[in-house]
Length: 175
Image (cartoon, rainbow, N blue to C red; front, side, top):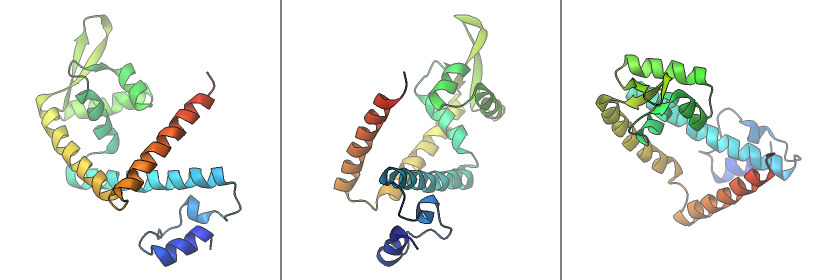
């Protein structure tokens, strides 16, 4: 049992995952940077899996569909598939499949792009905007409940530290 697993089991028994994640499987001998990465990955995975489950259960949708609709809320005139692909950091093929499903459900529409006749813009329909607003309210509540176990000062500190990490990482990426 690693130091973290022992600590979590005694201090926070509800936090110890039923199936060990990558962090809890670490021996404690790994470099601190690797342990930090595994901890961040574990936190993101736990939260993302819960959000996926709640979206599926309460809205019969997926996280990628929610994410695509979220991007479109910021672009009332619509976005090209390539723009959606870049914003969501997935391939054009992924965007096409998600868009096809959303269009079939009447949640988005394809419009001809006046500036480029070869491409189209994807835009939320009125039905899509209403549906997304309901999901967005629920999503915000879920995030608050999942992160609510941290004191406000701890959340602020974590936010600032992750901002520092983001800047530091960008500065070290190849040009």
